[in-house]
Every structure is written in structure tokens, then in C-alpha cells.
Length: 280
Image (tube, one colour):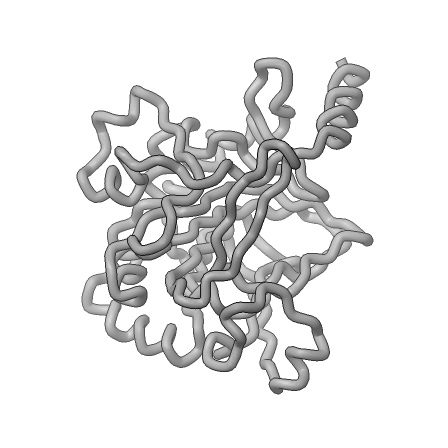
């Protein structure tokens, strides 16, 4: 990804701009290994014992991300990324949220501008996630493009971690304009591009209406002081291959504080079942 000597330089950029971009952060071999693993499950619905994807809006999320193979685990646990996240947050970090997802173009769905310094818990009775902002939370998110991205890429408001309100999750266009926010859009990027950003930076995925599809990897590296986050499921064949660093970052021995996002509504589940049934 990058050398230890580059961490100081990246820290300066993160503190100034709130993000860094690394071209070809993952090698072609790493991308090929992961994409060959995820293609089948991203084309079959998780239902009635079949594992594949979970649908939320116009996005498919890989179910039980880490169970699909060691190449996926290795992308999430790059030592250079973990060292940078720890140096930036000021303490050891762990993966609190994770997903691999495929976005489909939509003329109706628009992601709102938001920040991610928050704590999520799941209410099983209401079947919904409850969110609380955490002003003291400071860490990094990694978004890696697993496919070429021509439009619909990540957008960030440069240096917004300096003036944003850390107790506020969602932002309007008017609020961003009032702060002279500079929008940086990461389109026309090759597969393997890696973005690392302070998750207090205001960001979103750019709305997009046309193909091709885009596939991405998301990881949130949170400081030790924050809750564990989502459960992490592994295949037994991979456990003995993990390093001590990987075990720590993957929260070995710790209890999750929420469920894996997303969890479809009962209506969504019923619609998915009907689509699957009539397709068969």
C-alpha cells in the first residue's frame, strides 16, 4: 500500500485536507483474487439458506464479508493502513464497520451528505439501527475501488473536519455552501484506487444514473475507546493463518455492539423472496 516512511507525509495531508488518495493501493493480483471470489455471491440473493448478497436500496452488500476468503481479510488488514489509522487517531484501532458492495445506477436514489463519527446499535424489536453521534470519535475510513469508477464515485468536502460540527450527522447543500465547502469528486479512477479519510469529513457517493456498475470495499478503523461495532464472521480454514495484528484488528475475543448493516425490512425481505421465487 505505502511504506512506513510515508506515514508522516500522509498524516500531514490528512490533518490538512481530511483525506488522501493512493493510486493502485491494491495490486492487480490482489484485485483479481478478491473479484473472482465475490462475483458469484454478488449475483445471488441471501435467502432460504443460500448465501450471497443483502439488498438495500440500489446497492447489493456481500453477506458475511470475511467468510469468503483470506484474500478479502488481507485487504482489510494492511499493516500500513492500520499503522496510519493508529497514528492519526492516537491509539490502537479496530475494524468497527465493514462491507463490500456493488452500486447500481438510480434516477431516484441520492445519498445525503453525512459524517460517520457515530455509534450504531440495533433495536431488534423495531428492526432498525439507532444512531448516536460521538463528537470525540476520530478515526479513518478506507474506500477502495474494486472496479473502475467513471461516475458515482466518492465525494468529500475538503477540510470539513476542521469546521464541521461533530455532533451533527447529516448536512444539506446550503450548509456546505455557507461554509464555502470545496467538493472533491473521485471519478474516472482505476480499480485499486484507495481513499483514506477522517470519518468526520462530510462525504457521500455522487448520484449517478448510468452504467457501468461499480464495486467497492469499505472499512472503518475506530480507536480502542469506541465500541467494538459490527460482528465479524470468519471461516475456520482462515483462522490459523491470521497474524496477531489481524486478530486484534478483527476484534478477537470482543463482543460486537451492533449487528451487520444493512438488515432489510420485512417488506424488503418479502419482495426479495417473491423476486427469487418467480425467477426460479
